[in-house]
Length: 207
Image 1 (cartoon, one colour):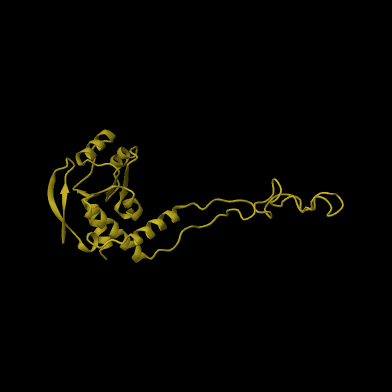
Image 2 (cartoon, rainbow, N blue to C red):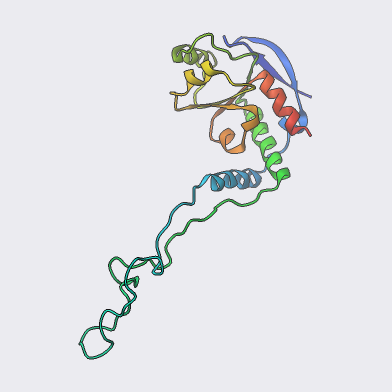
């Protein structure tokens, strides 16, 4: 098994921990990472863009004027897309943008994203990450101990002080282990695990 250093919140190494080779040392395929990240973004789209076609416009269906003899162009109903206030031709309608990605592919992509952070030295593990009080300044001091910015922090359980202390920092995102996903890993430079959360992820991905 590979080894990774575990730190305390002062940035001091306190021990080494085994991590699973089948998760953190796999070969990385950019095409699979791209497919899964694109699937996540597509699934998050609301797909609520909507226009009214001519059948949905509230207007008389009466012919506006007779076909011949007026000197003007022939015309039909007021709801025609050619007229102001008429329906929209081929406009956007509500739709679902998501597409299916196999469970095995999603798991493989998550392993690859974790392996990428480990291989580049951008994966940090701390033994605990609990704040005694709700204080953003204290939270920032901890990040400075590791010289971190643009970081995704993965915890094992809800922590109100930690969540509220970090929520005003745009470059920081908190996730619980169950919600870990490829897009969030790839969109942050660093990945910081609280050690129990790392165990949860290993158990889920090692199956």
